[in-house]
Length: 288
Image (tube, rainbow, N blue to C red; front, side, top):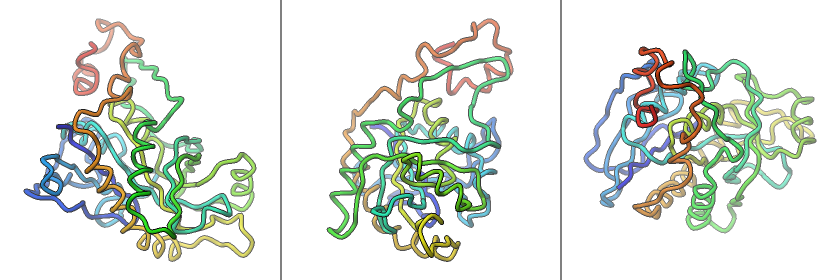
């Protein structure tokens, strides 16, 4: 039975209800993860869940500086095959009011200072990324959210998450530009997390809880206090959705993400430096 990863975003620093819990500190070639990985059996299902708070339990690292590669590598090392993540986001649409849960299916990358790949240093990997979230998991997570939320909670299947560098929020000009492109929500952590999940052949989807209207809306000035208050309010609904998604994911579920590296390595094996081969063995070993 596959192990499910859960990456908790802002406001979510504790794991789902788990039995036989253990905390594992993973060493990775990419440094230390944000925190120890909490692993346990979910609700007597026989399925293990590995939980990692994206920003650490004390939220001590900004979006730009997060150890994204170490985090995803640690989950891969823990045997994770699917990741459900959560994000706190601002809304770029009037109808996506705070409290709305969005399961995006697209990303627009506006970041500029992040390590976007596990690879390099003598090995070149070119992967398709047209659908940055695993389509089957997007539908599955949306159904789980719809099944567990109250009638007054809006759940949206699909939408574009524009990922900005941060840690500052948008200017009004930027916010209006994002709206003019037809994008739906804005946040700071989708990239490179989604790219690294694909590079690790992990199926990946996220549920984004709307906390604010960014700054495009009249009289709207996003503040940390507002974000934290609404992130806390969204926490129960997000966790309930994740629990349902974990509970109902078929034991033998597989999708294209799980073979995403096939035919993507552009460097002959014998040309890859030995040190690089050792570093990426967990990820590329079966293809080299």
